Image (tube, rainbow, N blue to C red; front, side):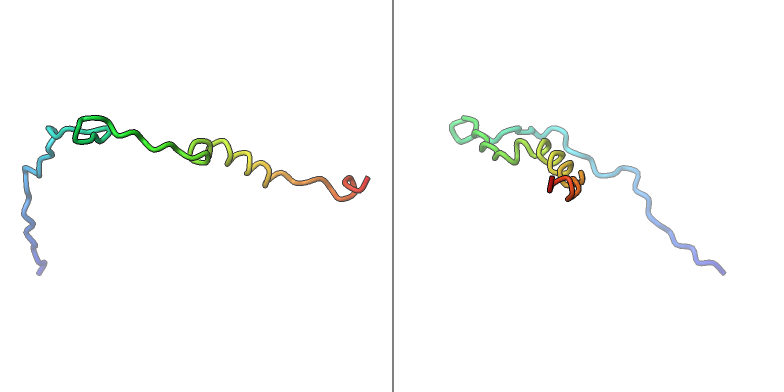
Length: 69
């Protein structure tokens, strides 16, 4: 004889509060915006450096005979 398991079904799920204010940048107590810290060189230009490094690693070097001449 099969066992029947009853699972409660909830029609109304938890609601999301959409009325909260989203703050893009935090402000100080005076209301002034906090400046973002400046990014480092690698944080700014990593997307340009990675392909250059990959090309240099994946391209083969010349043969040793050509280097001797």
